[in-house]
Image (cartoon, rainbow, N blue to C red; front, side, top):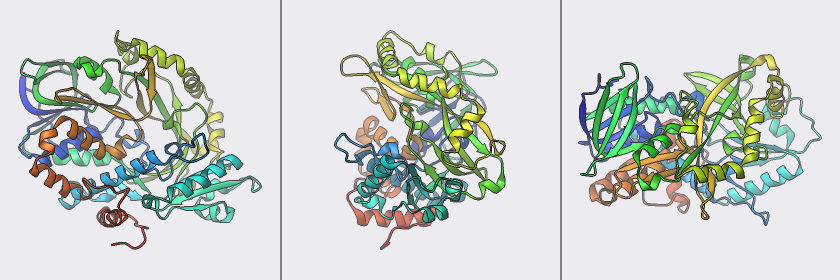
Length: 507
């Protein structure tokens, strides 16, 4: 991979992408497809791409299509299920699949087995109230063709055939239920990211630079940006000038946004949440489970802490993980500094940060309690999903770091958000992506929104519109409203990506 063997003192670019993760890779590939003559410089503080939130061990790996994630379908006060977020996420994942299929057909990335596989997505609950919730959720979701083929059962024998580890040793008098969607996927976003950067590195006008810290962002009188960087080993400073800057540095995006000084970034803060997995070390146990089984999050826990017993494929090896166990840290990145949180406190975001902190004291206490858990307590949590789990078959692995968005509320206080948010300057010359879940799975939709905001004239041009339709055949149309279009694109992407397609009446 071409890494731009050292930066000159001053270099020029059309686009600067800060952070070599899935978001920058997606935006870089889209921009080069839309306008091949663009000069793009990628700046990454670590020595390789996808080493933070996009890495397989640091990312949930579920192709988030809202098939199994119960937190995307909240129950409203009147007892009905709100499916709007689930439908939006499901449609966004289908858009990502189209873009990936396009890249494969154009020979831009390697064979799909490197990063995506079919795996059933399941939701599993116990207790009368939770079973009733899941039953209503299934009925509500299957009214939409995006969830066609989702199965529901309360039958223990059926469940034993689907998820033997989950059912072995369980009290058969306990009421249980599950949904199953065979169209689910496991996605190695680290492998996908590296494939895209490998292709980008071969393109004219693209330079990848690893080991560089961004120290300062300043907008020049001509509205271009001056990005000052320093090599982490040599300490040598450099400057990159660009028309547009994208800050896609995961948890590190917030400090860089604040450094930019754009008015739109004022008032934003971040709440860091760490994670850990229990990884199964017994191959015999690993082979007995073949699904992503999601449950309900504990009261007061963040959405990223929804427990799941998860079959993964990492570096060509089948893995079985349980978690994540949440934790509290002041780092914004796994490879960050304990000073990240205190240094992010500014005059303009101090009140929202303190206000959100006071409002979310139960969450803080929950995270501290998670950190203090003993190995036995972690295994006990695992046994709710795998009753016969043995502690000696599992070891603790540190997962990724997330920074949840805090922003000003309507009355000046702070609001803690659990999604992703694009913050862009009024002139469209700089944009940052803040937040976490569902993140990587919806990267393509997020980048389309960014392009609409930052490149509005070009997005309306005939050339870009035509190319967008090539890359994403459903572009400009609603998959949630057009069942026939969904069947067509789902059939195409399933074939190209080598995935199972359970949709009936394929076209």
